[in-house]
Length: 343
Image 1 (cartoon, rainbow, N blue to C red):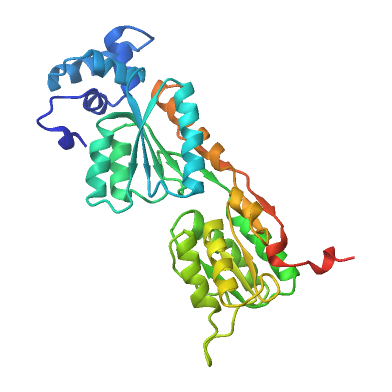
Image 2: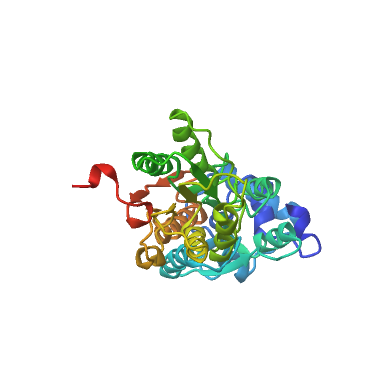
C-alpha cells in the first residue's frame, strides 16, 4: 500500500506498517500518551527515521481519531436498506465525534483506485458487501488500516458484521412449503454475499423436499428490477415454462416490483402467486397485500460496524471479531392463508 502515497511524504500509516504496529501505537509512542513497550517504541522510532516521517498536528489527530474521518464504501446510496444502514452508522460515528467520508461505487470508474485513495485519508474503513475486490481488501489489511467488512462473508484478519441469512431463508421456504406450494422462482442477483446465503438456505430446503431449486433470475435490487423480473417470471408465454406458485425475492424492493408486475398482468397476489421479500422496510408493512418477509436489523448493522471500527482505531482490541445479528421471519398476507392457521 505504501506505493499509493509516493510523492506525498511518509504517512503515519506507512510508519505503522514499517514498524508492524497499529497507528494508535505509533501515536502513543510519539506523544508518550500511553504505555508502549520499550522494544515497540524502538521499532516505531526506527521506522520514523527510515521513512523521514515528520508528525503533524493533522497526522496525530488522525492517529487518535479526534478530527479525521472514517471511510465507508457502499455499492449504492439509493433505497431504504442502504439509507437505514448508513443512518445507523452515522448516528454512532457522530456520537463518537467522528465524521464520515462516503464512497458510492455505483456508476463509478476505477473504483479500486478510488478506494485506495480513500484509505489514505481516513482513520479506518467500512466496506459494504463485495464492492471492493478481494485483492484490495487484502492490501488494506496488510497496511494495518482498521477495517470492518459489512454484510460480507468474513475474511481472515478483518472484522465482520452481518445479519443471519441462511437459517431464516430456510424458515421462510419451509413456511411456503407449508402452504402447499411446489413450484418456485427466485428473483435477485447472486451476490456472493448476503443474497447468496439466502439462496443457499432456500435451495437446501427445496432439495430436502425433492424439489429441484430454480436458478435465480438476475435483476437489480430495486423496484424497477423486480418489476422487470416479475414480467419475465409471470408473463406466461404459450408453451413456455409453468408460472411459479411462489416467487422468493432477494429483498423487499424486488418483491414490491414483482407485485406491481403481477397486478399489471391481471394476477392476484396471493391468489394466483405468492410473493416474499427480505429486509422488512416500511413499505413492506404498508403494501397491499402486506409483504411476508424476513426482518433484519438494518440500522443496527451500521451502528455495530461503527462501534467495531472505533474499537480498532483506538486499539481497544487487536483480534478480529465476527458478529452475526439475528433476523426474523415476518408472516403477512402476500403468501396467502396457511392451512395450519385456518380455523
